Image: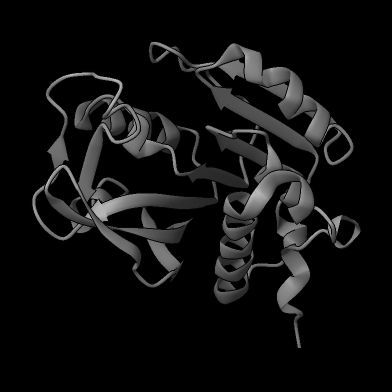
Amino acid sequence: MKEKEIWKNANETDSHLRYGKHIEKNINILNDLFYLSNTPKAEINNVLDWGPGGGWLSKEVGGKKLFLFDVVKKHEKVQRKNCENRFDQIDFYDVAGEKYPDLDHKIDLAMVFSVYYHMPSLQYVKNAIEKLRSYKPTFIAIRNMFTDGESWECDKFTNENILRMNIFNVNEFLSLFPDYEVVSESKKETSNKLHSIECFSKSFILKRS
């Protein structure tokens, strides 16, 4: 039987002491999603991490080539440090202002964990997803805030709402990936109310049809 921890880096058993419970939770969610999707780790070589934070998820996955997309250039140093022993090559791209590069390499896995709801508008998210789909990754791992009601976006930028700029209806969001199918998903979790909207966290693995 395949071990559930196949996506766990056995050499990082103390990693929760360094990056905290939030990242540990995301790693566990990613492990669970891929276990449920019955995807061997050997199929993942080239990884695109969009909004990688400290690069902890990429470090967990490992592979041959890593593409890092971030809007904060100063994050590059720590991302490279955390991932340098897990990939043969790392390329960083500053994608602030929707400056998305063209990629020539095949992407096996794209990860977009807790990123889309930080983007400034629903249309901005749609543009980012369209670009992501153009890379044709085999798998896309997504964790995001959703609602069962109407999609919502913030009408102004303030220090109070910077972390929640948009909330997609979950079905509308998935419809933005017509060439992908859901192969595993988490249950709804951490339900709460933001901007008077009932919303929840949910994670998916999508596979290219």
